[in-house]
Length: 309
Ligand code: ASP
Image (cartoon, rainbow, N blue to C red):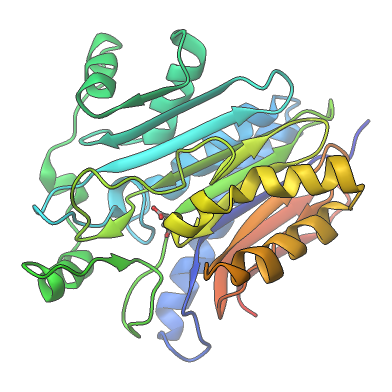
């Protein structure tokens, strides 16, 4: 049997020790543990990597702590526009949605795009129409309201600035979420979900729903979920770049993801991190910021839940 493993993230950014109360830190760790164990259990039960990443991401989306699903940040017009994607490394099937609202678990809709449509990427009104045809229930605004996120938005509304959830401000909350997994059969998968940037406008979409940029999976190389400054991660085609370094330069998952996060993306001005797994269950979780909410667990008995460097 293959070593099976899972890694998750809850966003990278200005996470410095002592910045938050120990009670809040415990809350983050507990939320990460819950998601990690939910995904790990799926793998332990012999189910697919796709199911495991969907399960873990759903738990993170259901937490108000992370910028995805329930905790999604506010747009310039005080709404929530969410993006999500999922990819199956065995078949290279993928599904993605962007600019959706009212959907409790955007990752589930992305998976439905992958499995129940002929397409890969649905956006905005069309994606919402697809959800309606599948009888998705829509949550009202109150479900997505979070006081801290609203305050973040109030501070910059009516200005031209927009803010990455994981950027500079000491009290800002962090949080695009993602999961990568390798199952007992050696199949791998990745999923990513986000609310994007606070005060975003013009239908701004980041890297998270883009195949090859914020999310990618291919059994031949790796499964990747990214978090960071989306505009740079799109231009760096980050997730696919890691896969390319493994495929064409024969790098290990650790070498390839370090090269991209600590060199290539830095060179073009991008900050953030990623989680990666290969078909042998090896995991890498590099980031070039002060911290990244992250956790991993393997069938070899290794478990890690960390926030800081
Ligand atoms: N990468 C996400 C985006 O640009 C944000 C994040 O990771 O926090 O939409």
